[in-house]
Image 1 (cartoon, rainbow, N blue to C red):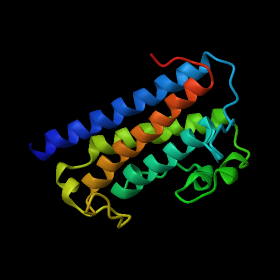
Image 2 (cartoon, one colour):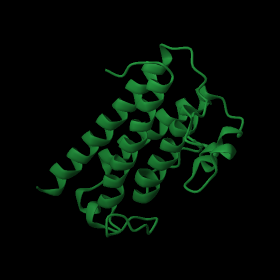
Image 3 (cartoon, rainbow, N blue to C red):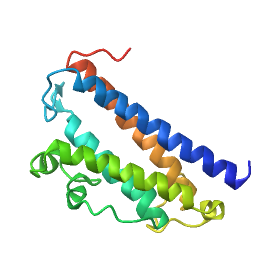
Image 4 (cartoon, rainbow, N blue to C red):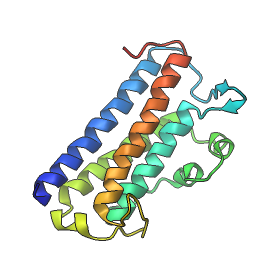
Length: 169
């Protein structure tokens, strides 16, 4: 596959994956749920809808925007949802969910814009965060990992829809 086709495919995958996240959010919108609720399973607290959505925005900002030299979305709350941060720190950051969700959409739009102008040759270049992912440091690897990472969290969101009493099918 040539790089231009590959980049278009990656871009489509990033967007289609995000559409599934919005599907889960729309399901939750039809129910009266506490988006901060953290269910407990066998003594382990799961992350809330609030935390997962905010963390997905942080991850997309890093794996697509920062790693490829894209624009800064200027969302100071992202730092509370970084890898290794405690769920409690994010839950207590004081940012209303509406602002989190607007930022989630903003980071995605900036990412889609960045993927539209990224040259196909950049896929082979090292990512600007110097992260090793999938046995390499290319921008391709960070974009591919973003899709995998986001899908994992969408699965969690869909479980939360079920735990809140909703149906996903």
